[in-house]
Length: 335
Image (cartoon, rainbow, N blue to C red; front, side, top):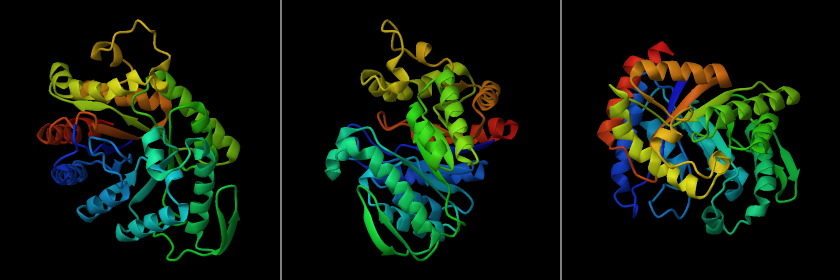
């Protein structure tokens, strides 16, 4: 069982002083590497008022330059917004800079503001996404190719240099609905489960993904992104982490995204109601049991822990550092 960090870099409400947030994230990644974590991931959004950083590969490059072993990656790049040849070349460059430590996570996107920023119609996102993945794979091969699709026409293209990793970096797809999980099984090297869904739905999506991967003749790798926190007591975890994760969940709740759409209308928006079978938090022994339970249910090989939340900007850096250290000392060695 491997563990990574997922860091949302933002500073609500106006996105100020993000240079300090980047310094904090680099320090968190360095401590994570020293504490036994395997990786550190970053996401992409555009026009967010909290300053959510729009270029995850640049942040990943900064982290790679300050670490030696830690894998760095994106979860996710919004692939329909970018030309796939450019994405392929940027990832190759980071793969060479990091000596083979990059993982490319891609998704189709769900926020209209992201698509407005690039004047890309949201109704084209699935077609753009699938063509994009196909083109990236061809770019990474280093062989000449042409592509004639609905959105991209490329003639006699050959991308050099080739990636450091052969045949290329792992390509993961983030998914929160069955159709996306099936797509990941067909064309990806791994499936990243959404962090705010419950165990039952996470297990169902993982099974959909694994079945599609078997049908496509691809090996399956399940990655679970989870909202998680370890502390000396459950009460301390609730007090330090609870307000920040609930600030993030309020956005999902109000927009009735997939993971909350089927909850009973009378359900009250409280940590007590949302935590069971969704959040992993408490004292070290509880976290160990929960990660083992999630691994058994979903078959996950990797857990990405979302300690830092965009919608709240926290918890504070000092608290995140304490949690990373405690995870490394009291949780990871027993998983």
